[in-house]
Image 1 (tube, one colour):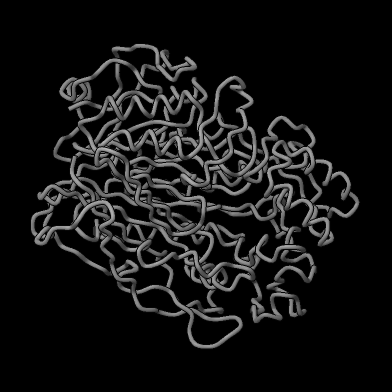
Image 2 (cartoon, rainbow, N blue to C red):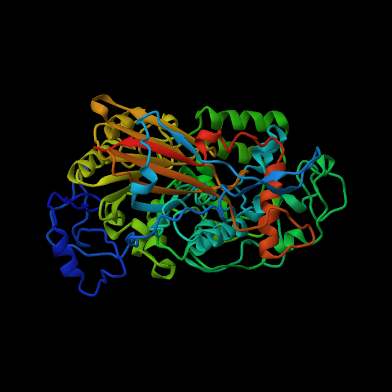
Length: 591
């Protein structure tokens, strides 16, 4: 069976027995997986995506191998059992235990055969996190003031992203295994927008949430909060004030001590599974949309002592239109906007931890042993990525399955995505080299949101490719089962069919910042009847559905995070998707 190549792809095949012999102490009984890397001195630099040839490979402990397990479906702790839902009433609505979402069998790509539940065997199982958007809400470059035009440009629950994410980790840690097969979960994959504003503070919080430790989601003055929620401005919810604001007029509560609780220390147990990382536009670009890392004014403003909190509705609309229409990908207009409103900016405490991070900084954070958790080292990334300046890689999931993580962000700016020619060739070659393994592809952007093909400033001569071209490559390989992604903050599952019977499913999952705040468990099974099934099961955080407004503990804040997100003005109520996009069995023809 062909084995996975290096991050920038070696042309040499490496036999599994050779790898296991080199691993030495790697325990087969523990089911330790591995990824193959080039030697540290032989990273890829070629523009066609090929690596320097190497004969030395370093085994890396990764996902747990799926051991034989009884097929023991369960629903507890998943949205099959219960989903947070609004209680009766209107206006600001409290949440409680709602009915679960049933599993739907989708047969657009293959007909399901009777008796398959008794025949199937597990190939792999994993959890997808996406769009956590961990936010440094006191950051000077945030765009809260766009709320003057768009109510959803700022959300009342944004200060609670860290306790909300920790509660999601707690939910995954409590799962008994894969809900359909009972097989062990191999790993957790994040599919981007792990941070919100490309700030070092947020990156540190994300790494700690995932791998475990203490986090203080605060920046600037450590003694008190300095942001829009104690500004006295009526366009923002002022939770600690009895004064009436626009959100309180909609029923939002007065919560004494909310901001102090939101900025105090949080403890994350870290995932009890290995985890991998995929990059999103909010991780790669300041504000998720500006290719502005080289702008000295914005670089200084990020760590400086002035924060703009209020502009006119007309000015807010003009700036938001420029972002949506991608007329200012380098942030030049945004820089001029801040300069023009400099006198309106409020004084805050400067903080160097808010500095923007680069692609290299992102990779170094993942390679830092302090954030290894249960591994693997680098969480998919390696020093070869650092040397080559790339953020894509492949890894072995199980005996019969590989995972491929793409970088669909465009360093040229704008929030939609694309991939360069070198990466697209690498993807095609990696799938071809591993034709005897099933493949799951991960990215941040969906096929329909990869429409931004402006050049990468670091590779100005390289063509960028859209989502249709990625679909074409994936459709040419019969071993591709699924493309798993996020970005759109909505559950959406799309069948892709190509000539020759080739087909795969595109699984897009809702964010964990907008209601209903979901993650997704994915299981791959062989039905032993000429078909395969991809099962998807959505899970919420471990926080109770009913929030107690008197409970400002870490768990209480996570419950409040969900309730506030449901009630956020302007929030879409359609992000859960339809029943066919939630808990599903997605059937495919084998081979």
